[in-house]
Figure (cartoon, rainbow over the protein chains, first blue to last red):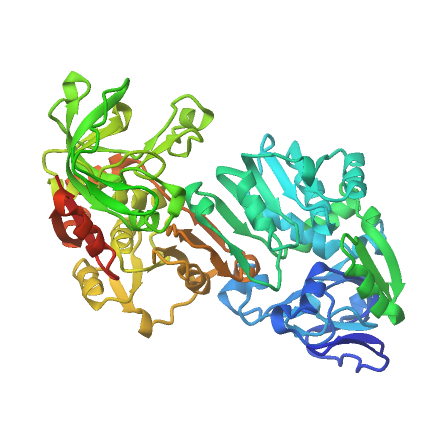
Length: 316
Length: 316
């Protein structure tokens, strides 16, 4: 099958990469659309030391697996957990110490024609959700994770730092609970997109916000944390979303002095995201910048790497 | 009066520093004992850009102020708040944006014969608490702050990193709630002191603890945070106590991936600390390494700066 392959040094389109073999409790999924995430771009800078087929966002149809799933349209949670440990027992398989992670840690991902996913990780896509929406399930679930971790109150002053893909999703999801969301960004076109959705926005250059109750750091950059610490009020909450390959270098004195709570936030459960997509309570398709065929995957990655690029998809 | 004075470059014993003047809502306190804290040593490395009389730990007697307080033995909270802002209204004067902080920010401190403190900040010292115990009220209150910020459960696996002054107090306070406390340190004598108090200890060199529910970073060193991140379980809580003058440089990826909650923790309210001292539920006097007269304050600071030094006090 065709697949993009990262060997730790360079990315290549492999025309005949081995199709995943059938295995116990695994389904083979024919990928329809895959999304390129900033994490993938970090992997190409050395993040996680991953080697293999990258990609952890997809929608596809089951090609091999349980009979009742064959031919059905699915999305899949990315953490392949052991199912036996104490984290798995608590429903926290995404923190299973033995886990593999699709396209990130020990498991090939979705930048390919086929993908092997544990049957337990699959979720059927509702009829009303298009492929171009369903492919956002994973990043959207990661955004809903914030609501699982932090108690957001209706009147909270919430600031989202970053108008990239993650910031645009975060703003929409937080708005389901909170009234006062401000997104700080660098791109007028993206902020305009949010304005149309009724979210308050401000250009970074015009921005002097202080003492926010909740700040979501979604800049995708190591420098975002300092800005977030400058923005959050004493005893406020800072949600750290960005994973970057490089170290952070900053003074954490404000964190201690202001007794800030920093909550690291990663993957979320898929059902709230699928429900939001089905109910059209979030709008994801305006985030699609371009769809490339998998055969032009190298160009797609180059495109996704452009500063300010929104979601680039691969169709296979 | 005699006072130690830090001019931003060097520390000197001033034989005739001006005694603080009377002022509205302020009391003049004759210092009996003052404690040298690691924060003071950080100030001498540039922390907070403070200039003036350092020191924020003391016990003394009121020399000028409300009649009912004259001659009474007092300790004092270190944040001098405006009393009018929304933080003050919530009882969070220690986060008042207009605050001065004794010996740290805009207010002279306790390394002197006399000290000016807002009357509202003073607490009477119970008869049963000796000066040598009362002088620990401030650092002990900062430790009780953890219990105000983090819900500690009896069965939680709690690790305290650091066997310095702060670590020794943290371990004792956490043990009032939790059953399973382990202190990781570098000094066998200090760990032995904790063992006598019934706390489990381990030398850093022998230590392989992972997946703790709560980790308290009390190393006083920028490198402690990485160790704490390696120790805390996914979805666990990391209490960050150390304030250091230098930057932190580390990867915060584990914070995000493991969805750790980092809670910055600074000053606390005095009543729980005074109550614990009165009830003898914590033991502080073994932490006293030496008491110097204020006139030998320069030697005292040199002593307190020795690696591994415990509490050095100044008597005036």
